[in-house]
Image 1: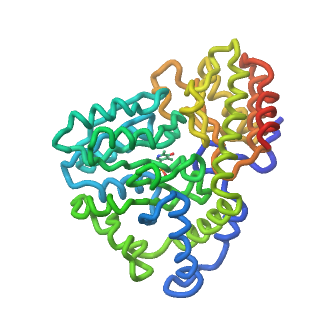
Image 2: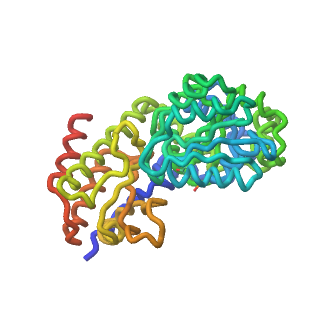
Image 3: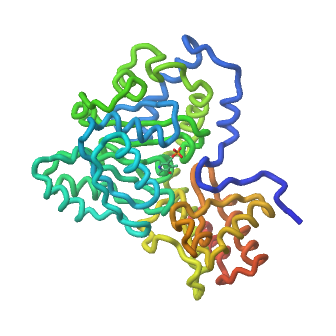
Length: 401
Ligand SMILES: *Cc1c(COP(=O)(O)O)cnc(C)c1O
């Protein structure tokens, strides 16, 4: 029997759950793109997007997914042949490096693997070994959604400064904006890449770039720019169409307005705290499942190095994780994330990893429900696991709420 009939929960982690308020805000007739409600509403989006990132710099929106937003970042930061140092902590770090390299940027890649964060000391020595300042920017993912590793962005900036190097710091915040703490100006971040479909709770389709004055000045002549990706007309738009270099993403913008209202009504710091509490509940459940069952384990050992919007874990032996995902989706209406980039297809451990999202429009009953459903699936499938996981998660919620 399936007990999946009811509201499904996509916890994969992106696209994330779209709030009814966002859906309702998008449910309207096509607006006039030359005057009236849309341009008037959009004028207020820019200051709120800057507030979200903690910056007084610039922000722009491209009709694109995250891969498109990477290209916006790459093409505005670099000229052909200029050098990027990429600090990778998972599949998305590697993909950004690939995107930069294919665009004609010279990429030096530090691959920190899938379970350890980017090392500020190694960054500092690499920059000290670059006296001619050939490295124009350091590219790093704040939370890599595949590994769920979270990098210490302020510490990486401190390492750049300690080396006395002028490199810009560019951060992929696609999975962390609206989930993990971000203080762009305080932390000395020069560029953030964002997308609508994760912590921002809007369907995929908007790529965002926040840029510091320093990045705009330093990258003025970057020759990888093509007219669509160039941030100059967008950051200096005097006519509405220039913000999008064409037709505006009309309905997505109304959705984004609503999601920002929701974030600021709750309070940005409260949003970060909610994500942290839900993350800790998930971690507590995995710790209980994995006690005396080493085939179940969180991917990142140190809680301080874990993102708060997604948790990557091993549920072995393969194919236990894949079987469990199928069970939770078809029997209980919870779709969990695949173990992205954690195993290669020919790896015998493939199908032994998964991810639980707790990103965006998610509350205690959704996370506790997802964990209880996972518990039920492990029981139904005879996947050996420790006892007390749901109780442990409930305890975290009881102490946080
Ligand atoms: C989802 C994600 C991306 C890719 O976004 P797409 O919209 O799939 O192109 C890039 N980086 C991070 C950290 C992500 O979470």
